[in-house]
Image (cartoon, rainbow, N blue to C red; front, side, top):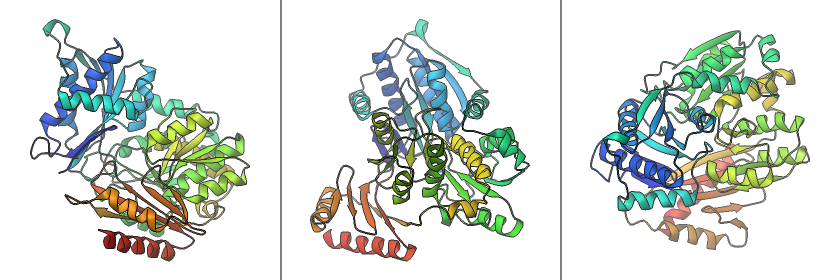
Length: 459
């Protein structure tokens, strides 16, 4: 089964059987459930939608838009957009909510509906359970012909989003322009191929080299921005030179840098570097999730600021950020949340803040990376099979390490003196994710392999 309907939306592979894959029927039913939920919350009948560039996007967009029109909504259609752009647009146009049509880092055969509330933030667990109840019981009724909605194409929200970023006090466009940087962009043939070069042009970057920036949606490599998938841009920088490489996922909410030597800056260190820049100007709490690097905690301590960890998931990070009045936070997979703009992961604002930090530091990207503590992470996964007792596996693992520091707010995380391991069931794929971190890559990978063998013995 490759259809996953959860509290945050629905995700699956295109085609196949209804209820098992993301078919047109499943798309219509989920859109109807979300639209109905919005009608129960207010009389507002405006909704914003946007999509990444994957080939199924136009079909999914047409199905979702027509369903919402059938419920009486005015649909503001941003077309090929980014997740953070839709998040910014929703409250600005005073919409009831938003839907982003993207399967994020999943391969091209996947697509998804990601749901936003009127604040432009992902719906809460309580909201999601209400939407699923409407879906599972088909509690939706469509409008008669006199009350049908409409679709209004909107093409300028990418530029508006970028303008809002450039207006932020910590974004120093003039310092960046003066540095005359050469930057290479890998847009993975999706929305990033449009909007990352646009923000770089707006910031006055002297030379922009585009790799995989044609937004065809046919990803030139695995779309998850991990080192093993980014050899092309790394090799380009090594051969041709550049000050920086920028890589994003298909919906532009994850951000990864390549340094001037063609080496990974480290997806975990995207947030570390941006947090360093923000905390240099304003002290505040810092938040990331349980699977993020200890480097962020160390950085916060260096600045004399508190650090807090949340369960994995953007909505969970945002909840703790609001509770602790944090001015910067995010997820270690390259997700920057900067609430002065909005409460959502945003690669575009991350780019602007990082570039401001880089040029003001007077360092190269490699030199800047060397100022942060070194931790190394390994990421593995176990494919779920029918009948697998996931809760039993996690319980057995927790019991084995009960004498260590254990956190079970999201799966099971075990902290050792110089390393940690975090096991959790994915919300977006039928897998158990295994994250480890240690003082060397070899130690992190060894710990991950040991954990996989232990889990196999528990099964």
